[in-house]
Image 1 (tube, rainbow, N blue to C red):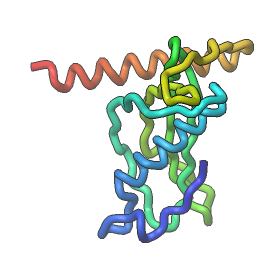
Image 2: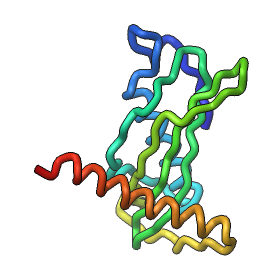
Image 3: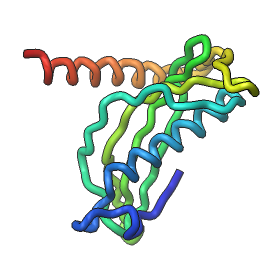
Length: 147
């Protein structure tokens, strides 16, 4: 997904509102989940989010998501956000998180999703990086609050 950061989605410093970025991430993750499962999906959870770089008004926001794991009715999706200066092409990572979505049938009840296949080495490597990245992020969060 791409968005342009416009005034309605900025704070008084001309930077992206965190809530707008979270909204875009949720929509992008849901689209990835729906494309994978061919079902309507709903957000079950979103892991920890750190905003590591601001997005300035007028920049292009690139939101990318992909399914990296499945359960019986759930899909795990990694979503990354980058900001791009449209004049220079300079790009930087601004945030990322991991979402879990649940697929629904026509009556709105959880329904089975296909197994995730990663037939190429590149796809398997992408999945492995996402699984390991999620584990590492969760460890870091626990360490922050481990008194």
